[in-house]
Length: 78
Image (tube, rainbow, N blue to C red; front, side, top):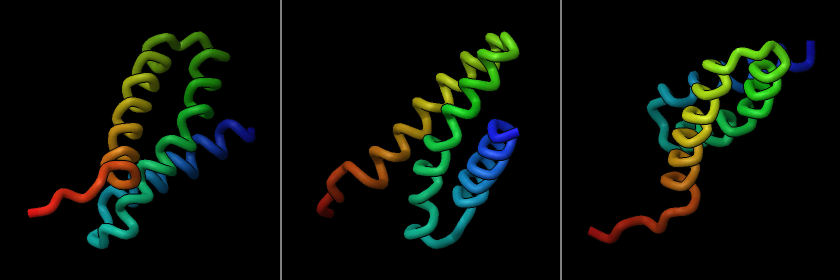
């Protein structure tokens, strides 16, 4: 039950934020996406859905890239 709740709320919030017009909100998408990943991993492993597990690994790398882009990388000077 907790897994389904975390998976749904954090994943949906992450996807929702990717579509926000405000950068200050859009940058939070990667945070919520990363928070959702442990729930995905647990769900995939506990049900032995290895395709979902591999997809979760790929999604983690995409959310990590977004986190780096929006939170870690220095702004480029034009």
